[in-house]
Length: 282
Ligand code: ARG
Image (cartoon, rainbow, N blue to C red):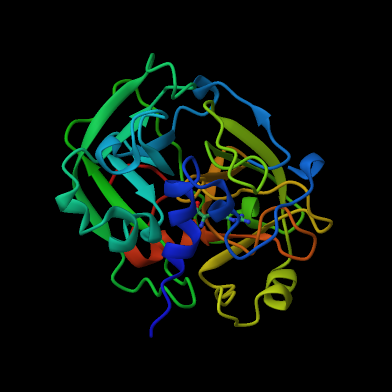
């Protein structure tokens, strides 16, 4: 049977509240001090392009139906992970999820206050996304109306120094903060470093969890573990030098030494879509 990693990676989020043991998935939780893992709270206004993907019908209303992250690259254009839009996650094709929305500008999902909720009018999933290797893990959401203000981040084009190994980057999301299914109500961020491709090639040479491919993926975290994205952060932004370089995609466990986070490389999204320029208009 063809393996569907999205089930393993995202279903735990769906069930975490009800069945905490399941949220550990196939990997052990990280130590409590190494946990957005190793992150800190941020206000949505500090990263206005970070959005939550939401369906209350599918994921319940407590945390506003949040199940993945996303990033606004145009006023009505949001990038997210392809695996977030998988049928296994949504229970059917995205267009069937009538209350699929993005929530922008809201720090605390529990409060229901602040920011804006905008319906997704069209969800395009990269047809080249491969759920076995995890290659090409991105999709493009078109919003029913443009986001108010201009909460858009520029994308780092191929060759941008922001991609260089050693560069400091920040990842944002409402995902698991411990690796044991602890979902925060409020947005968090974690400081990580862009790591040499060799580290991820070594960590992920081609197992059942995915295969690292340096042309379309980006390796980031801390060599010793600790700071990382985790379940529920998928599709959200990795930012360096003020520009978008990655989308949270996959990893083994969260924050574990020797298992860095793997991100969809934004320059490869631009190449695939023929978006030549680093600006957000699409
Ligand atoms: N696939 C996860 C999600 O759906 C994101 C996992 C990221 N893991 C990591 N160790 N960086 O939310």
